[in-house]
Amino acid sequence: MKIERDIIQSFKQWKDAPDRKPILLKGARQIGKTWAMEAFGKKYFDHCVKFDFDRQPELKSVFQTTKSPDRLLKELALYCDPPIIPGKTLIIFDEIQECEEALNSLKYFCEDAPQYHVMAAGSLLGVAVKKRKMTVPVGKVKVMKMFPVTFREFLRASDPKTFEYIDTLTEIRHLPEIILNKLRTEYRRYQVAGGMPEPIVALLEDKGIGVVEATLQDILDLYELDFAKYAEPREIPRIHAIWHSLPAQLSKENRKFIYRVVKSGARSKDYEDALMWLEDAGIIYRVYDISKPGMPLAAYQQTDAFKVYACDCGLLRRLAHLPATVVADSITNYTEFKGAMAENAVLQSVMPMMDNQVPCYWTSDRKAEVEFVAQWGEQIIPIEVKAEDNISGNSLSEYNKKYNPPCRIRFSMQNLQFNGGLLSSPSPLAGWLDKLFALLGESRRT
Image (tube, rainbow, N blue to C red; front, side, top):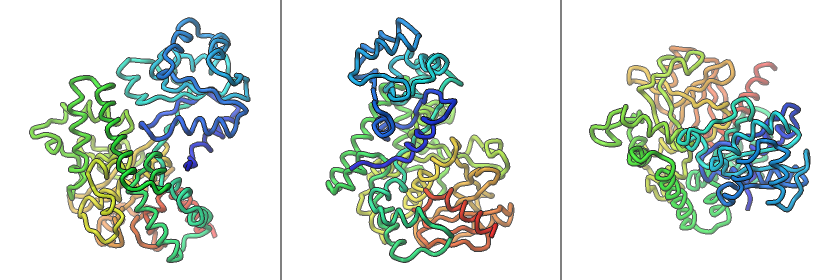
C-alpha cells in the first residue's frame, strides 16, 4: 500500500513555476522524502533519475572536477539508463550531505541550467551542514520542509469515504455520528502507528501490532545511531538523555521542559546545543511560552520557558513504552500522558500549515495555560487541546477575557460546531484547519 503525500502537489506547483529553482528538501529521517520525490518523478515526468551519494560514493569525483551543469550531466548520464532531457527528466540528488560539491552545484543549476528540474534531499541535512561547516547556496535553492504523514493523509488511505466526506465539507456543522465515530477510530489507530510511512503501511496492511512496534523501534534505533554518527562526541550523551526524557517531561501536569528531569543538577547552558541538534534534525519541536499574544509571536517568546514535543506521536508512544492497546481504548485512563499524546498529535497535524513557524503557548500566573497560540496570517489564534470529551477548565475563557481574539479553537473528541467565536472541532480535523478557517470566513460574509 502507498500513502499519497500532499507535498507532491507542492512539487507540481514548483514544476510549472516560471522562476523555478532547484529544491532542497528537508525533514526528519524515515518520513519518506526519497519516496515522495521518486513518486513525483514517475507521475509527472517522462523520466526520473536518482543519484545517491551514500550508495554511490564514486559520484563525488564527478562534482570535484567541474562546476558546469552541462559537463556534470554528461558524466552523470554514464551512471543512469534513462536519458536526461530538459523539461522531461526529473533529476534527484539523494543523500546530498555526503558531497558538499554537489550541494554547491545547485547554485549553478539555478544560474546556468534552469531548464532542468533538480531536487535534492539528505538525511539530517541541517545537522550535517552545521557539523561539516558546509555552505548552502542561499537564494539559489527553494528550501521545502517535509513532515511525517499527517492524519489527513492517513485517513485518505485508511477510509477514503470518510476522507471524502470531510474534505468536501461546505459548512461548519455537526458531523453525522457515524462519521464522527469513524474519525475517532481511525485517529486512535493513527496515534498508535504515528506518521512514519513504514509502520503505517504495516498497520493498514494488517501485518499485526508486533510488526508495527518492531518498525517503530527500528526507527528509534536508527535515530540513536544518528546521534553517534552526526553529533559531536561530548554532545552524544546529552542528546540521548534529552530524547529519552521526553515521556517524563510530557507526563507532568505542567509540561514545561525541566532540565533536572533530564539529569539531576543539569543546567541549560550544558544542554542547549543538544536541544538545538534535535531541532535541526527535525526530531523535536520546541514550543515557547509567550509573555503576550502580540504580532509577531517570535518577539514575545520567553526563551527560558518552553515545552518539547516529538516530531511524531507514534515514535513518542513507542519511546514511552506505552502499549498500543492503551491508546486504542478510549476508556483507558493514562492520566497526563493522554493529554500529551493529544497535544503532540494536534501539533503534528498543524505544522505543515504553519509556514515554517512553530506555535507558542500561553500561561497566566500558573493559573491558566492555552496549549498552543498560532500566528495565522494576520491573526493570533489560541488553540486548546483536550484528550477526549471532557472540556472542563477555564484557560481558554481566561485568555478570551484578557485578549478577546477574533476566533479561538478547542480540539477534543466532541462534535464540530462554531458558537460565540469558539470553533469546537474533533481533534482529527486539525489537519483541515485551513479549510475550517475558510468555511468560517465564508459564513461571516454571507
